[in-house]
Length: 191
Image (cartoon, rainbow, N blue to C red):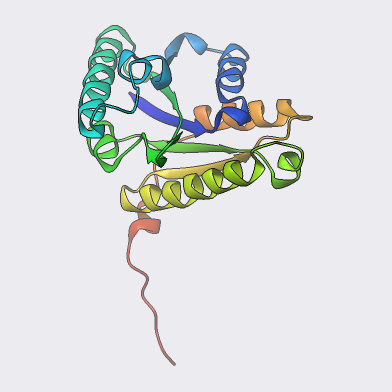
């Protein structure tokens, strides 16, 4: 089962983009969707619990859902896991998707949705949102390189949502294996 992780802030309209992308795909019967933000561990998050406890219950709940999907889905199926990458709390930004997530679930690709800077100009929390997007990008690049996971960054222009939907569809459809030649160390010759 291929796992595609789609992440972004709420301002990117991530949920509606993922749902529209999946509805518009042929053979969508072999594609499943899990919204991490709808799992009970996140809904119960108040900031008072230890982050470690939240991660454990969230990842346990996700593991059960994935095992059920693997058992009931065709072998070449795809699951789209949708989530925030970071949460903006009173204490600052907290990663929701940790190294442990990547070790346990081994997503084949990360699709990072971003709102372009020019779209943020009139947003009342533009500075905070811009900072969160930078953190998300840096963190996605780190996780992508650490776990040999493909990364696609999709700019979500509110006026041209169809382009973002098509980019997400392409990411779900496309092969998600990194060519072995890219994983080999570079051999430099000095002349």
